Amino acid sequence: MKVEGNGQGKILSQVELRRLFTEGLQSPRDRALFAICLFTGCRVSEALALRTTDIKARTLTFRKSNTKGKLKTRIVDIHPGLAIWLDSYQPKKPGLMFPSRKSPGRPLTRFMADKLLRTACERIGVEGVSTHSFRRTALTQMSSAGIPLRHIQDLSGHHDLGVLQKYLEVTPEQRRQASEVIGF
Image (tube, rainbow, N blue to C red):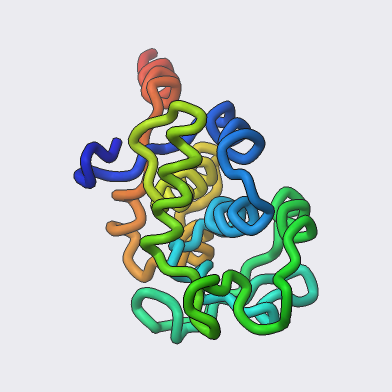
C-alpha cells in the first residue's frame, strides 16, 4: 500500500471499486478516465494520451508513441463495464479524450488526475490508492481468475514477465488455497 508517496498503489477490493465509481468520482469524465485504467490495465499516462479516434469498433488503441517503452501499439477490447462509463462521457469535441481545462489543446496532466483520485478516495475514506492502483488491481484480478500470464502480459504491454509479476498480489485466500493442495 502506498504511504506518503512510498510503496505500491493499493489493490482495490470490489467494494472499494464500487464505492469509488458511485460515490467518490463525481464527474463522467473522471469515471471514464479511471474506468479505462481499470478495465484495460493501462497506465494513467496512456489513458490521458487517448484521442477520440482511438476508440472504434469497440476497441481502444494505445499508440506506441504513448506507451512507456514506446515498443508496441496495443489494441484492447472494450469490456461491457467500460462501455457504460465511456457512453456516459462524451468529450465536448473531437481530439483529446481528456483535455485540460486550463491548457487548451493539451491533455489533463498526471498530477491533476492524481489530485482528482486522491480527492475521490478521501471522500469515501480509502487510503493507499494511487493512479497505478487500477493497473495493479486489473492485473491481479486477471491473475486471480487464472488468466495465463502471457495473456496478461500482452494486454498490459509488459515486455518482461518478471516486471509483470511484481504487480501481482497474492491474497490470503490464494495462500490458503495453495497450502490446501499439499499433501497425500
